[in-house]
Length: 357
Image (cartoon, rainbow, N blue to C red):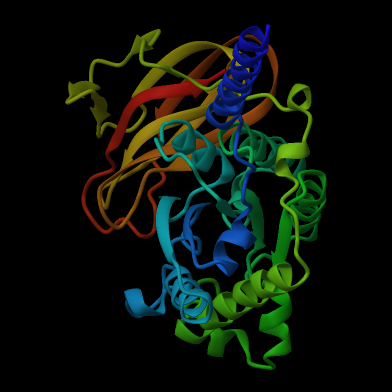
């Protein structure tokens, strides 16, 4: 009898040990938010999705870029290390940022900076911007559910409707909004003293960006701020489908396929695509020889797009959104109008595909 009790006790102990091992192996470690990681000197993976200000265009060298200054400032105070991931493009809108993010392989991100608005206001209205900015935030939340989001209202943005969109969506997605117009205004320096071209900050302008971001993070650490992104209900977030369509409906003989890009220099030449969806973008090559093209949707003039750029670059350009979700036809026609920046004797249009849902 005693021997049986002994075996029974050993069996219970063995089962208990197995149970504890199972819990240790299968229990998920609690998520450490980015502020805890920074404060504890741990490695932080962060992502910037943005335009030219997002990539610090205008800084005299790498050492004066705002994100470099932020990294150095936080490392000096807390130790640790930062791994930077960039999905940035000069001249980009939230549309291009979203398209590029969908094709980016970054993972395990702790912190995301979103920097758009200045370019968007040139190509769309505030309702279209709301749709695209919200779609971008949706994509970020789905891909990085435990990341802290920091939205930047650019110092140069003067469209109050666009500013309100960023502010409202930041609140809806528990993002921290940093309005860089405020520290620029508080500096009491003129725009000429803080920028290179009235838009892109100079070295001191980016210093103000960095100081504001560092101060925001310091305050969050001091107040033991919690990252709330993961509390957003999954059923309220959806990834915007963005399909790339390479098949044209009709094309002018002057367009020649050169390495996957249909290229023409002949004014009036057209290439047409058929698509079904509520928005439209186009993949092109922008270059110093880039021309303009008039865009017609269902035979109605929609907009004119310039493909000029100071150097050759593949770009994903926004065309329009808010279309009825049905079959459409889009025609791109090489315009006789020429960008004032194009000083060459050519007006090249190079199209590879369109982007729709």
